[in-house]
Structure formats: structure tokens, C-alpha cells
Image 1 (cartoon, rainbow, N blue to C red):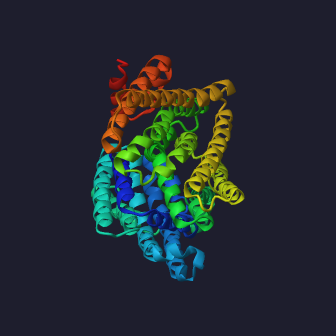
Image 2: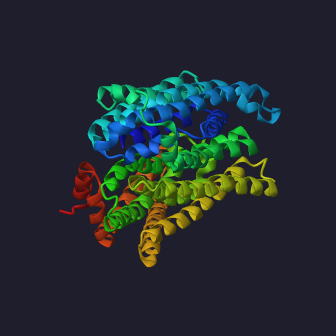
Image 3: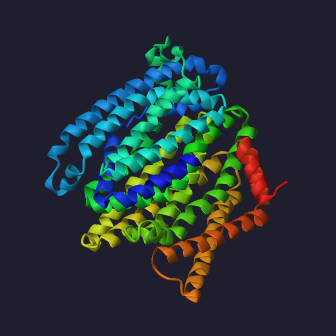
Length: 499
């Protein structure tokens, strides 16, 4: 939670100090990394969370050198890409001037630190030592926020985004050693033959490639098709809409994978675990993602004074897509725990249709509608294309996986409809009440009026959501408590008065 709050605060700082072109340059760098780092860690980050504690010593060294080989090769490709930036066509001059080469070089340095951080951090996660990990994440979050603020205020431009990104791996690597997650044996060359490792890692590599293409390459595609400023605005909206996704999917995947690993081999326990995660996700995820779209207009006026107002309409489309994409992301955790790497690969491959496919559809629509001279319309259309396509592909994925584990279709479709509908109705009610109060009391414009409107909408939204969940979905609420780590379960129990 602290990490995501820090990310949100960092985005607020970036929105104040950086231009749309600078944010667009960073987005393009991420897109290039999606190609040069296509293999990521060779699938090591997918395999490690699924390893049982008693097996970790046997696999740690192999995974470290496997990840190092892939990350080292990716770093070389990234450095090579940085050297090619001056040869970009004149139509992409904004990227050349925005510090793209130095951004790529810093990202390449980060790749070299990642294997140390991953192996050490995963040992701590596999041993279910989540409290020390939470402390590290808190330190990382504070450092990220401080570095972002310093670099942005000092006029660092795109480096205000890149340096904190690289610093996270450095902090994780140091923490891994201090927590005992990294041991000398983990850095030794593995005894098992490389061909045996390669055979085992075939599907994890494929899944890692799909994840890289799905998560990052879409920004490269969009950057090649629309101006840097439009890409920057789209990336800003996309990141904000996906804050709940990064909060839930990123953190809970590594929690759910070890928990589901214990059920591996027991068909009934596997199905029960998958269904619990799905039902809980479809209830709680929509109320967080759609809240972002509901609260954005007054929040944008309060924090940025209208600088990013042109993405307000597009946010709704992106948040709808993020709702279902977050749930599919959470379902990857159980699949990893059950070592269904082939299924994960298929999952990630299909997601590409939602991101890259949506970007291509949006670009084609923009070209056909001649929106090149209307930035706000360009951004909204791109957000709509990507958001809707992501939602459709995610729904298909969720229906497939629940059918694969024998969950009734009626139960699956009811869960996929109920949570989003509840969140959407709550958001509309909160917005309506906020507008009524603003009109009735004649609130002043500017930041003061925006602050009051934001407080009203937020209070109403939270209140209505808690009442609706507590009294219309109590059974799902209680099932959710059972699958969460103890601290989160206790907090949820107190908040909703479950007793």
C-alpha cells in the first residue's frame, strides 16, 4: 500500500514538473525496453515464486545465472538501441531532444542488478516472510518519492522517471543480502546441465516474452504513430488508471503463488483456491479501478490545475479495461503457484490483443477521423480503443480459466457482471451527488472548489461501496478474508465488522 501511494505521489510530482513531451519520451523508452528486454529474466521471476521452501536452495543458483544471462544480453541490446537514437527520422525529433539515449542507458544498468534482487527477494517471499518484504517496499517507496521530487524539481526531465526506476533494483539487491534472502550458494554456477534448465524453462520464457510485449511494446507502437505529447498524455492516463492494477496484481501475485503452491496436486483444493481468488477479485477490484475515473476530474483540477484535463474522458475507458485486466493479472498468481506455465503463456499472449491490438485500432481510427490536429480527441480515441479492447480480451480469458477449473458458467458470468455494475452505479451516484452539492451551494471554482467536490465524491463513494459490499456480498467478503495474509484479513474484518 505504501509503495502504491508513493507511486501515486510520484505521478503527481511528475504531472506538475514534466511536460507531455518528456513523459512521452519515457513511455517510448519503456516501449523500446519491451523489445530489447523481450525475454526479461528468462522466466526466472515466474518460476521462483512457485518453488516450495525446501526446494529453493536447489534452484536458486540456477535461476540466478539463468536470469543474469538474459538480463545481460538485454542490457547490451538496450545500449545498442541508445546508440541508434540519433538516426531516428525527423518526425520523431521530439524523442531525440527529450533525453531518450541517457534514459535507455540508465535502464540498461538496472537490468544488471535485477537478478541479484529477484533471487534474494523471492527466497524471502517463498518462506512467507512478508513483513520484512513490506518494510523493504516501504523504504523503496520513500526513496522513489524523494528521488523523483529532487530530480523533477531540479529540471532533470525524463531522468526524474528513470533514476527512481533503476534505484528500486539497487535497494532490493541490498535488502536481499541484509534479510538473508541472498546466500553465497545462490551465486554459484549451477551443477545441473544448461540443457536441462532450458527444457524446464521453455514455457516460462515464452510467458515472459508475452508479458514484455503486452506490458511495454504497446507504448513503442503508439509512439511510432502519434506525437510525443499525445503519447505522454496517454501514458499519464494509462499509468493512473492502472495504479490499482499495479497495487493488487503486482503485490498479491507473489503472495497468492506460494499459497496456491501448497494446493498443487489436489484438484478440489486447486479449484476452490482459484474460485475464491476470482470471486474476491471481481468484487473488490472494480470499486478501486472505477473510483479512479470518478475522482479524476476534481482531483486533476486540485493537483494539476487543468494541465491534464484532456485525458478526463479517456480515463473512463482505460479504467473499464483496467478493471478486468487487474483480475486477469491476479489470476496469474494462482496459475504460477500451480506451475501452469503453459496457461500463463496463453494468458499473456492473448493480452497482447488488448494492448498492441487496441493501439493499432486506435491509430487507424485516428488516421481515418483526421484527429491529428485535435490532441484531446486523439487521446480520447486512443484510450477508448485500448480500454475497450483490453476489457473484451480479459473477459474472454477469465471465462476460459474458470471453465478450465470446472466453475459453473452462470457463477462466472454473474461475478464478472455484479462487481463492475456495483462499482459503476456507485460511481455515478457519487458523481451525481457531488455535482448537485456543487451547484446547490454555488461552490467557487479553482482548487478550493475542486477540493470540496473531491472530498464529497470520495466520501459518498466509500460509504456507498462499504454498505453495498457488506450487505449484498457478505459470503464473498468472508471468503476473501480466508485467502488474504493475516494482517490484511484482520484489517478487512475490522473495517466491515465481520466479527
